[in-house]
Image (cartoon, rainbow, N blue to C red; front, side, top):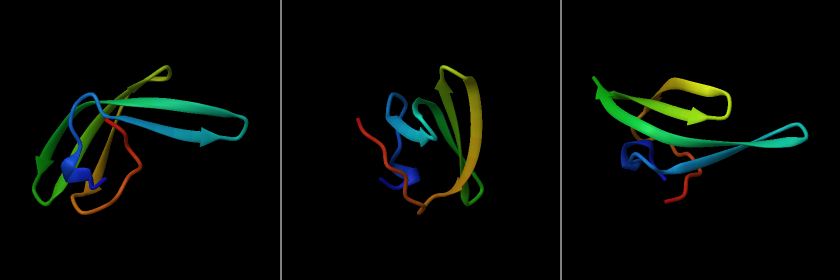
Length: 60
């Protein structure tokens, strides 16, 4: 899914060594030509900036 298509509630998983971390999209907003995405996980809240046309494996 393209970053610009993400919506709050979308879920993303990341494989880390011997375990999987699940993230939920909390917020997404456009900042110029980029998008700031805020995620929540068992590790807490974090944000990242992406190009709008970048792809990420997400599920609704």
